[in-house]
Image 1 (cartoon, helix red, strand yellow):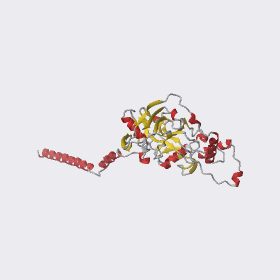
Image 2 (cartoon, rainbow, N blue to C red; image 1 turned 135 degrees about the vertical axis):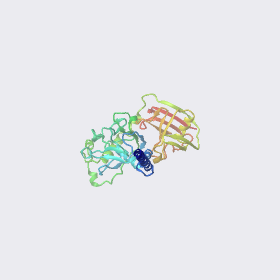
Image 3 (cartoon, one colour; image 1 turned 90 degrees about the vertical axis):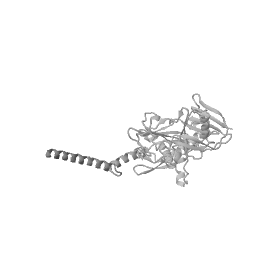
Image 4 (cartoon, rainbow, N blue to C red; image 1 turned 45 degrees about the vertical axis):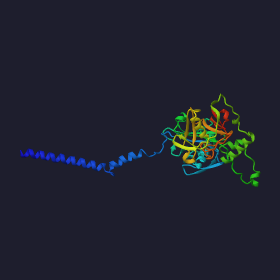
Length: 381
């Protein structure tokens, strides 16, 4: 009988000991600072952090506007070597955007520089090639073969002219722009020419090399000299760019045409990133009035440039949204607003006055307004 009682007592002691251990482990693990608590805290906190964007994530539009390229740009490649290239090239344009703070740092490769004299685009900011995606460039809808035809279509060699529309896309080269991971579109503005160097007697007696020698990769002329000579030849032969003579092939859809009184004060406009108070007497303020009055059905505005340039971007009106090849641009009294880099001409900044005629066009800014697919006209009374 005593033995039986002793067994039960030992069992109870063991059970009590096990329960005590379990309870103590529970207390220790749940205390702040414990390994378990830290793991939970780290998991929770990480969900609120902004992770690095990889090429597998979709970020959409990075930039949309007009750039006046510099005469030349100095590019530092990933290898650490620096190169001076013409500013009116696809990489030269990106360099101008980087200096203006419109895009983050560029990742540039120089593996083809010795053999083919061109640089490669690896990444913009933290958006790099990888995961089956790569950066590729189209000019006026035509893709540049920057590796196969590097000597003529390399991204640091291809010569851009005023009015060209350049599309940079991270994604599948054969896929749709809307399905790409990131993209930006640039309209080439006025090209800043290099200041002429003092003429010496030796240089004055030198003969100008033939045009076929200039275009040959083995030519001794630098890319900047080639760009200057080609630009002078084009301006002499064609005083006006031929693209300005193009006409629309089909009918142009008119969303609205009418007059509005000049409004004052501020209005609150909704964007992809929140609400902003802007001047009502601006191109975006006018669109907000049309939306409020039911003249247009929807208005899409992006605030991606708000932090860097205090600029809001018009992405869509009704069913017409930025697609990479076509975008919304605005003319005031037939003058194109450079609504991105120029903070005085942003669509939420530029001040409208009585008598102004405002035209909103969906198409290619490099072409005449009447070649756009869609338009919307407003006259301010």
